[in-house]
Length: 345
Ligand code: 1CP
Image (cartoon, rainbow, N blue to C red; front, side, top):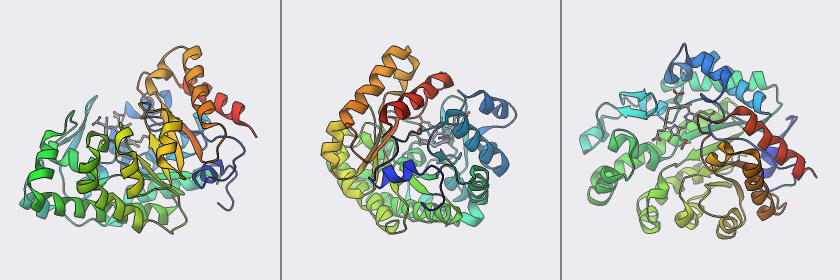
């Protein structure tokens, strides 16, 4: 990337040699940080997201405090759904709550077309501000929820453990599932394109809950949509990151859907995941709970990942899922330092 002081993250995304293994953390801005809690005491999450000065500040403060190699825009995967006319709230300690879940053709037809500049102007504005504040020190990651993960919130009405309603609809109501996934896919492409236009240096598709699917179901009901999104975003000069939780069994299918870098959780050794994925970049794998343990334990787990990777280009250090609220920031800084120190080339 021309002009970036530290482009190790982007180089790793392209499987080029980096000065050291780059690090960032999913949900690196959050309540575990004192600076975030101060702002959060005055504003709810969605208000922070909708106030570009605040979301830009939260984004940059977190990256600076941790000394990571990439920032990720502070937003939530629900924002574009609200812009499509879905009424929702974020419930403290639980997550999104949809006022009227999407269950039939009418519900899908009622969704409004999504235009990023009108629907989520604050995200676009926040990205521009973050780019200014970062002064080309590190790259900025934009993101969107993936169609399946977004559909799961819309259909269930909130977080779920087994996604029964979503799967029932997916299996039995193609006349609802197909248009829903199609509408969401178009939104994701427009949303991520607008983020790139505003200055995002890479984009991550969060398909957090796709690991709840069998490989055949993923292939039949999800792959066509996520695949279309990655095709549309190809050739734009920005790395495309593809993430999900519990995806050990569907990695091959996710790879088929597309992406330049794959995020894996801790349920599969990183070298095994990389063998399955082939010639792509990889990130993640450290159990966020390991960071809560004593430094001896998490140093050992972090080193285990580095040993398994063995210095291959294309590795980005990250957790297997988001930072847990009870995490102490010093522990994460210790991980950043350890990885930087031990992988310096
Ligand atoms: O009060 C709070 O601060 C609530 C916690 C919180 C935060 C910090 C929510 C509610 N959203 C956010 C911001 C957010 N959401 C970010 C920016 C933080 C950063 O990375 O620095 C990001 C990347 C998201 C993305 C997101 N939201 C995902 C995908 C990532 C993942 O963790 O898998 C998902 C699934 C959501 C939905 C959501 N919003 C909030 C919560 C608690 C949840 C998860 C609910 C669930 O478990 O189903």
